[in-house]
Length: 115
Length: 111
Image (cartoon, rainbow over all chains, first blue to last red):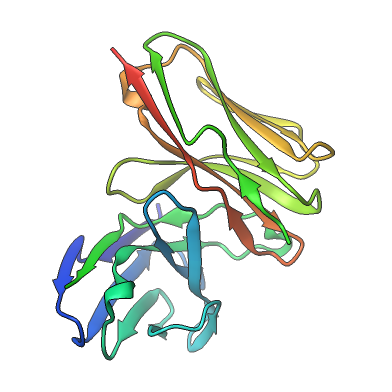
């Protein structure tokens, strides 16, 4: 069966420090991978998605970047965190079927607080 | 531009009641609609996915319906239990294969 691991669960970082959140998927190959940010009381905002190794699409210009060094590894990074980067970050995967009728499976999330 | 709305933002009902959560969307050109559950501080769990050609999907005590022409979906929860307390989110896959999310309904089931 497929599983998705996301860590850390919580993170407190000072403004200006770097960031690295990691997500890995097991039990599937060539998944679509996603990074979302969720603000309190609001819907999810898609930050990045990837359909293959080294292929990253950015949905929103921001202080963050993403990389996919391996098929089932997705990393969210920042060189210098801003206060506005605080939020709940979610990694997700899907099987990338044609037609868009694939389910999304989410990691457990990372609560990032930038102070 | 597709917009997804979930009303109410919060709902509290006594245990055992049947209840309906609502989701509306502005553009009927969708590939599917999904309902998710999110526990506090946790990731999302997919509950049901309704393809655009379908009218409903069922899983246990959950039944989701889809009316594309009116831009509405409902999630029906039968015989609610305290363990059903969570935030329920709906999302549609639009014509550009983008997921558009509602803000969620926070459900509290009182014992």
